[in-house]
Every structure is written in C-alpha cells, then in structure tokens.
Image 1 (cartoon, rainbow, N blue to C red):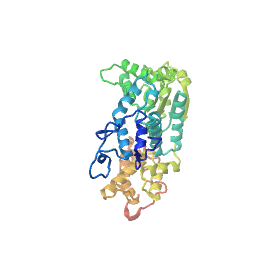
Image 2: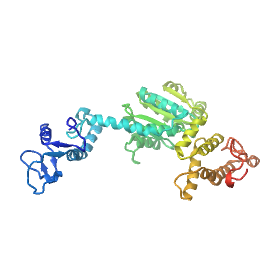
Image 3: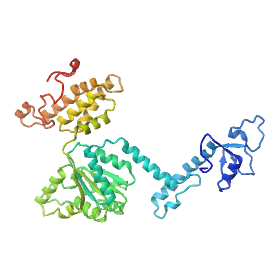
Image 4: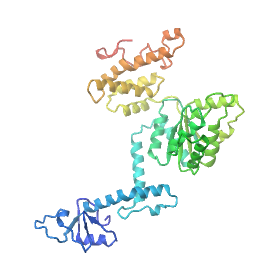
Length: 415
C-alpha cells in the first residue's frame, strides 16, 4: 500500500488490488472477501449501480483498506507491544504487523514527537539550563549528579518536564520527611511502577528497587534530595539512604540526579560533625555538581510570567517582575499573583486577565495575605511593628521598587 499510495482520497484499481493480494494478505471489506471466489456487492463500496448486479467493481476506495489496517492494529498491537516490553527474549525484529508499515520506526518517531511537544512550552531560564545540563550529563554518562540551589527558582518545573519527555527512560521521585526506610523505598517503588504493597517489608521493597535500577536503563531523579539525610537524632543517625544511593546505585553505573536546596550541604556538614561518617566516598562518586544562581535575571522572570499569563500586557508583566524581585518567594510569587488575577477575572465573567485584574488581585488577596503571613511568623513584637518581613526582602509598608504610588481608579490605596 505504501508503494502504491495511501492517500485517503484515492481509489485502487482491480489490478492494484490483485497486486496487494499477491503479498499474501487477505483483506476483508465489510462482509466480503476480495479473493476470486467471492464477489462483493458493489454497493458496499459506494458504487452507483441501481440494478445491484453482483459483479467485481472497477475501483476500491483506499479508506476501506486503511480501515482494515487500523482495526487489525488495534486488535493485535496491544498484545504485541506488551510482549515486547515484558519479554527480554522478544527482539525488536519480531515487532511487526502485516498491516502496519515499520512499527519500530513509527514508535521511535512517536517518542521523538512526544519529547519535542512536551518540551516545546518549557521556559528555559538560566536556572533551568543548568538543571537540564546536569540531567542530560548524568543520563548520557550514567553517573551520579547533584544540583543545588535556592527553593522556588524553577528547579522542579524543569525537572518534571525533562522526565515527562521520556517517561520510559526517566523517573522522578519527590522525597518527603519519611520516618522509616520502608516509606522511603515505597515512594521510589511507586515512581518506578513497581509493586509497593503496604504488606511488603522495607528490605523487600529495597531489593525490588535495586533489581529495576541496576541494569541502568532508567535515570532516577530525586527531588527534595536533602531528605536523603537523617532529619533527627543526628548524633546517633547514620546516613543509610545516602549510602544506598552511593553503594547500590552509583557503584553500579545507575544514572542518578539529586535535586536539592542548600539544606543538602548543610545536612552533610551536620552529619560529619556529629558522627564518624566521612563524605569522601560520596564526593568521589558525584561526577557532576551544579550550583544554581542565587537569583533570576529580569528577562527570565518576564518569560516565566508570560508563560503563566500569556494574555498579559507589558504593564502586567512588569508589575509581576518587580514583585518577584522584591519577594523572597521567588517564582512562586508569579503563581500566587496569576491565581489572584484570574480569580478577579472569573468574578467579572471574563476568560482573559487584564491589567486591572492584576492590580485588584494583588490589592485584595496577595498583599494582605503576605502581610498576615509576616505578622504570624514574627516572634518579636517590636520587629513585627516595624514590618520587617521574612517573606519580603524589604519592609512591607514601603512601596515596592518601581510600583506606582497610586494605581488608577483607586485600585490600590496609597501605602
């Protein structure tokens, strides 16, 4: 069919159909067979024959053959792909269907298209570029990497997009303060798609995880990697999770990337201070270490703001950029501001956000919320009265840099 042509608007002649039959594939159109013994009703192929005489049609629509191919693919491809994925003895040379042209090539093309589509909307900032560099290096060289930087600067966003681009080769696990090794390995097993029953013991989960990762086919990305270190009883704690990453993964050539804040290095120093553990072997296994910038450039912040609020005008983008620079929430400030602006637009019955929605959203929601958070987290009443904030890089009573002293129509009162 590919040699003759598969344009859905075309028709096949009787000679072309006979040539197709010569390849040994039996095609059924509706309830009739195209072999010489059977004569299908031409009306079933769209022929305008009023007397309904049973005779061979002179042409056959390509769409009928394509329908047969698609039905055959949907009936047989799931079983074939499942066997290819699960049976090591099932080689790629056996991954073929009579009614599908170059199935392995089509799968590879689909994976490439999926990766391109997934990463097309990714805003690559300076931080994101360094994160992607570490991820790609670790996957290519099958080594252990560490990415360390401030929170809320876009590390996790870039990491999730990178893992989603090739889900069959990359797995992301986001750690929490797991109180036991059993919970720790269950989180990793879930990310790998392995059995993670609550009835399994910690060592059983660990062995399952090892069996999946040690062949080196998957890249394991550990977000919030500072939770690999013990979080309590530091004087008696042993960094078993870090040792597992080093001894059970890095030593076997498993590509692992640890994404962490500066708590990672601080926790490492505390463990060395209070125990006899030494970090020499861990440092020797880290083949790539990326230290992320402490802040984002204005152009990067503006690009992220446009991604979250594509319909925004220049004034709205400039406002968001100034707010991010003044806030210690970093890029999380954009998310909070956009949600508040969209809330105001929804209340007004509009699908798009305007500059006025941004101003009202900040006036009614974001800034009051930040001030309440400052007052709730300040322990010293004197400091609280002065308005010194753990959230802002500057006192909240002062107008933020480049903010207008008074917004139009009384949207935001003069501070």
